[in-house]
Amino acid sequence: MSRALRKLSYAVLCASCLFLAITGIGTFALGKPPMTHWVLMAHVAVAPLFALGLAAVALTWSGLCRGGAESPLSCFAQALMWLILASGLVVILSGVVPMTPLFGTPGEHLLYLTHRYSAIVLTVAVILHIPMLRRRN
Image (tube, rainbow, N blue to C red; front, side, top):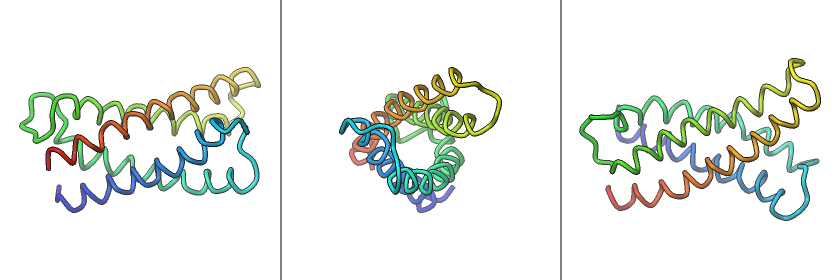
C-alpha cells in the first residue's frame, strides 16, 4: 500500500478516536454520564468515520505488523497496532449490538460497560502508539 494512504487512514483513525474519547470518556471523567443531547449526537455521528478509519488501518497497516515480516516498526509498536485493531472491533460491536433486540437490560448494561472499558484500552493504545511512529519515521 502507498505510504500516503497509510498515513491518511491512520490520521482519520486518530482524529476520530480523539473526538470520540473526548465526548465519551470526557463525559464520564467529568462526572456527567451518560451522554445526552448534542454530545451524544456528535459521538454517534463521528462513530462511522471511526469504523471506516479502523477498517482502512486494518487494510493498510496489517502487512507492516505481521509476525515475521520485515517492518520498520518495533515489536511493541506492532503489538499495539493489533491491540488497537482488536479493541476497536470490540468498541464497534459493543456499540452496535445493543441496538438490536437480542439482549435484555442486563445484557445491554454489560455491553455498555464493555464499550466503555474497551474504549479506554483503545485510547491508551493509540496514545502510546503515536509517539512510536514519530521516532521511527
